[in-house]
Image 1: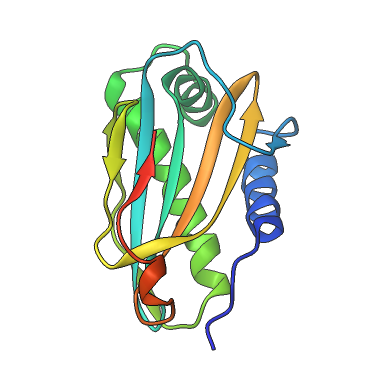
Image 2: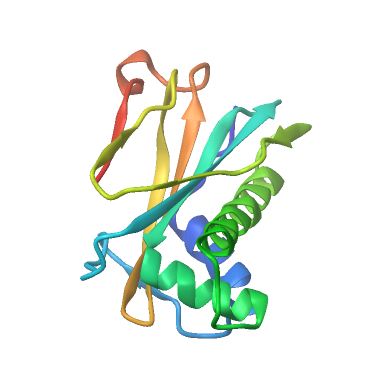
Length: 162
């Protein structure tokens, strides 16, 4: 039987990543926080192998730029560097998910998209769990999708992030 990732598991993995890269200050929320920023970045890394699914990270562009500034050690950033930061955060998150699921599995390179009002469709996948955070007054979300095979048919289909 495939292990489930509980919300507490997502909180713990996010805090471990955050503390190692950005220090303290990541707050857990009950739902997605609000941002005045109209730009959002979403990263997705798919996992294939003994367990199949995806890890998705979403945050405001403002937060992504703040994180990229710490990651790259400069405040003068190109849009590509901000996007690369979200890709790296997604990759770290997917790696932490991978370590908790059956092995072996492989990670795809991260894909990053900018937008706020969209549908994210991962064929044959359903949300396994999600967790919401805030850092420096900006929202940050982790969603873990699981591929069909270990979920009931009525749980499958398109999942909406908005």
